[in-house]
Image 1 (cartoon, helix red, strand yellow):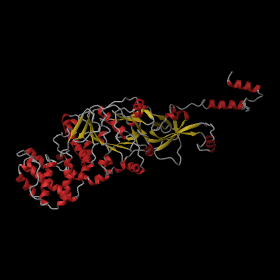
Image 2 (cartoon, one colour):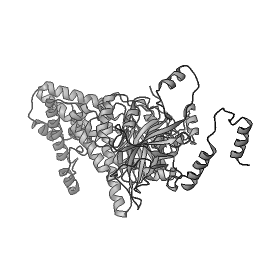
Image 3 (cartoon, rainbow, N blue to C red):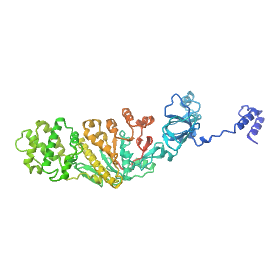
Image 4 (cartoon, one colour):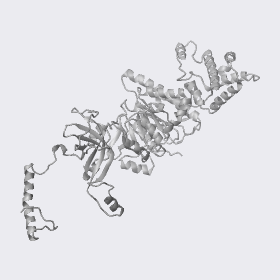
Length: 622
């Protein structure tokens, strides 16, 4: 007995009515409907083209936006389409296939009602449980149109309404987004099975420079230390300018309980960074005196361009004139005494003619040499009685030549000479230039594969000294990487990649400093341009991006954007960083610690990423 017979017997018992009191349809009408269904081919079955789809595209409305479509789905499929998911839209009518990305969260909407309809508002306010049937809605940004050969090109049309929408699996999503590589950043926000990585062995990624931006507490330190650890593992040479000393203990595993829990959730282990060395300027303390590999170093006056030096000192025009008068006289003295170039040394004679003082200083000149020359000039200008005091034996031993060279300097204005000499003596008393008790930085050792060199700047209150340290080491790194590149070319190999992290880069390269120090900025820009070809990448870590000039922003191709609340800064970054959709920009001021918008050259589109917790120890210096 089928259900219709049972229903007929039940109605006979109830006087021709069903239990619910509703009169049944006439039998002949039901039979006509059944016949119509059979004539039409039987009960409805979903077309094969829609099998496996999670939703369908909707008709456009007057509020639709170019490049996006709306997709609807049943409530059972809402959680299958999280934000940032990649989808494939297959148009059944014209056979076209599109790839898209979900840019606005799946929203739950009631069927046949507005979400703010009076009835729903009333029952919600009064605490009455009313769960009407509902569906999901997402906004999909079209990435491109798929061709028959698998290539993806710019779309020329929009997906048609009622087209099936399919969610790409993890492997295909990673392939389309280009998230593969040997340096892991984290996982895509909302998709914990999608790791976001970048290839350290691709010349199109890390040598193209990185910007890590965000306000205090946004997670920049976690990102930096995690990236240092990742690069060390793949054999990159890492140099980190540490302004606060917080990275000087990354050789140890983290002891932060919250960080350990976060690592466990990602199935990662706490661990320190191998092969780390902490460099500190001679006479200055380090934030981690217990580090097993501490190296003190000195500055070499001959390594600094005199033009960059005078910019860092902030000399006035008059003081600058005096400085170069003393500098030129000192060069003539060193040549005349055979210090550089050495007598009868043709190689050094040629090198002396090729010295580019916009890039470097005069070989073998020390700050003490310059002080002797400047002091003697001031002695004569001020008409001081007696002979000037000479500190360098090489000058005392040939006093006739020394006096003759100094006397050729035609100058006046003793006050400007006194101010200049006061600034030079202040630097000299720091005992950081040409100090015989310390070694110069060994750049060849610093740029060995997998070596992490942390330059601790935490005990340097003077911005002038800090900038001199950064300027000299950057120049030394560039010179050594050039050598490594040339050697590698001869043997047909790739040189060791080098990444240089500059913490608080806005202090070193602020808009104000660039205007007053164009030579110093040009040195950095030259490193950035040449580094791309020589596997030398710069990472600018910036807490106050509003102070960063456009000239620096133009050097950066890869971005990690943590929380930035200043709307003016966000507007400015939007003009410099392409490819981010409006939803990512709107989320930027509200990112949680550890969240970041990542835009790397290996990614086909920017992503919201949950950055991996750092496995190593950070010293949270106040």
